[in-house]
Image (cartoon, rainbow, N blue to C red; front, top):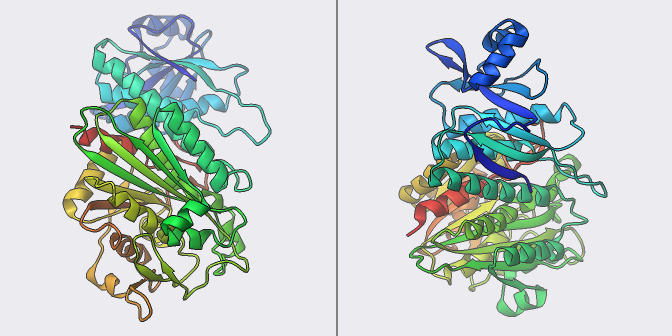
Length: 492
């Protein structure tokens, strides 16, 4: 694990110094470049470091990185944007700087120092998260793991306990996000319900959580008809994992529910080949909620949290569920299955009903649920639908604090009409248009009167393009930071 520390000056053994380039009243300025470094570089170049950086094409734009020609400690100038920086600006800038270091292919892990006028705890936290998230890489199957960083030192005049706590929180949260990325990037022949459940158990034990795993026999005995129906087509049976964290003094109770489809072929409603390639990622919601409760416990937050990860593999076979089948869900509601490729809402519905039995104050489910949400919001913004605007605002505030992009979508009255069935209590879907709203309306039928929010992360969960800022190509680990921030805001 990368060591994280605080220092009032640049450590002598630092390999790299990351400094910020910002804009003050329309004029570029290097932020917090230590005076001894400034003198040394000016003497060597015969010109001020800012002038050299600008001559090399350095920009204040976030994502811009410039390696300054130095001997000894390497200096990387990163664009910070406007001088009044937010934690997310710093997170993105530092992430870009660290990724630029990876391109240099260092022969051994680096000790980097961050000198960007880091004083406020949330900005310090953002800088460390940017470094640790930007340094992420997935180890190839059968390959040897490599580490880009060995130590991150934050150069700051502040030695307050809040600043030290920010370092700890950043390191813990980044580890949770990177764990989520690893799980999502693992191919479906290696990560399937049984092995995924084993990973969840290991994570739970590490964080001293109570963990319960229901196998296919226990699921059948209890009547989890949705999870069983989705898993029927696979030789790898489904699982439902329950993790619980119950600290002393907690007043509020948060329940998390995650979609854990370890591979989604679409079932009998088979997906096109091109659409199937990334379907190992359809367990991103479950990965996020498992990591989130682990982080919450490791940080010792004063809130009770219960997490349900509904795991199944959706495959076509002679035993697979059919469109028009009627399923009896956990709790007794009957559902007419309108499409076997709308499997996520079925496993979530079972888990949501089970979550309500714990009587939480708030339920949040997380899922790569609909392509319709990607059409509506693109690949970098997740959808948010909720039981009421107050609940939605709680999630939006948490997302803003975490630096993740969510946008509220409505659950309109008319989409509820699409769920009417002539052969069951309700149907699991409707027309293509507004599909994200219809899916949310279906899920809402299974939470009763409990406050509830649904996070559709279908777009941002997996980056099929080039890496940017602190976001790698492949799995992103989206929603973990938002869920942790939500738990922090609900502490009592």
